[in-house]
Image: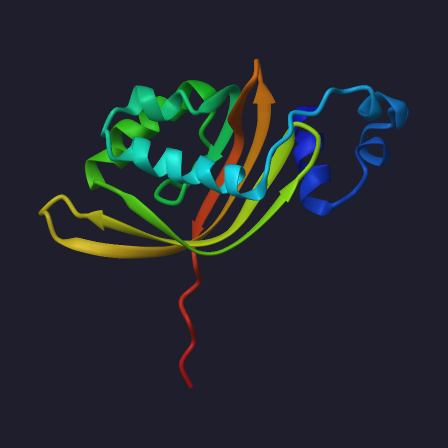
Length: 161
């Protein structure tokens, strides 16, 4: 059901249309007030947490049932694997910069989608950049905004004529 909620938000389809639930269920929730700039700051917090090089701190930003589809891995990362993924990813000393974004806010849910560029270091210390598209789906869990779904993939190479 939680994935359906994210999918509904991403596709801008009313949740009851996907879940076969009465429309009144969504109306009874108490929505946490939030602004676009506060949702944008969630990426800044995530990016700053990467700089700590502490995979436990980074993993703490994700919900217990979150799914991560990372840029530098070909597999989906389940909640138990998120910390392990960041153990390896943080060795690259990643830092991201948003290039383009669209934020949409619902009741206790928000998504931030767009493109970003990551500065990383290879194992031999050489710096490089990775241009990628991203999506972060956030939900309020126990009064905190948590990442429930994060997808990042390299941008396709541009064709030259």
